[in-house]
Length: 167
Image (tube, rainbow, N blue to C red; front, top):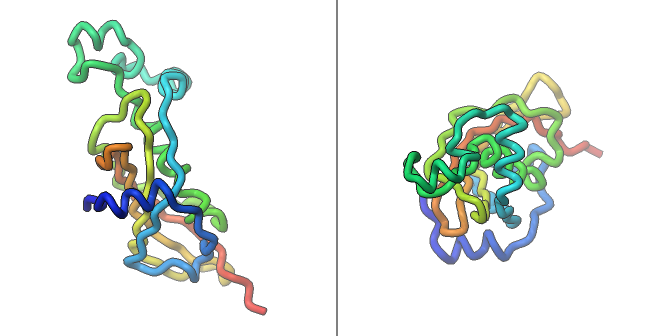
C-alpha cells in the first residue's frame, strides 16, 4: 500500500497521539507516526560492528565504490532499520505495553543508505483478550518508509498492552 503524498505529508507534519491503551486499538486502524529519524553513518557502522555483522556491504566503502557490491554505496544494516522503525512507533502503540510478545514476518523491501530519513505507520491487524484481566494483545503490521515514501521494511509486532482501569 502506498500512501498518497497528502497522507505522507500528514506523517511528517503531525503530532503524537495520546490514545494507546488496549481499548483504543481496533482492527483496520492505521496510525501514522509523526516523528522521523535520519540514519547517520555512525548509526550504521556502530550497530553493524556491535552486532558483529561481518557483511562488508555495511562498512566497507572502498569495496562498494569499486563496484564489488550490488549498490554503489554502503547499505544500512537491516537490524538497525528495523529497530529504528519500531522505535518510531513506540510512543503511539506501546507506551502502555507490558511486554512485547514477538516480532514476525520482517521483510526489507528497499535498501536504506546513510542520510535517509525513516518514518513509520502501524496497521492494527487484530486484538484479543489475554489471560491477564488488566491487559490484552494487539497485533500490528508496521511499515517503515524513507523520505521518498518508499517502503523499506515491514514487520508484524504483537504486544501485550494495558487496559484502562475501570473506576
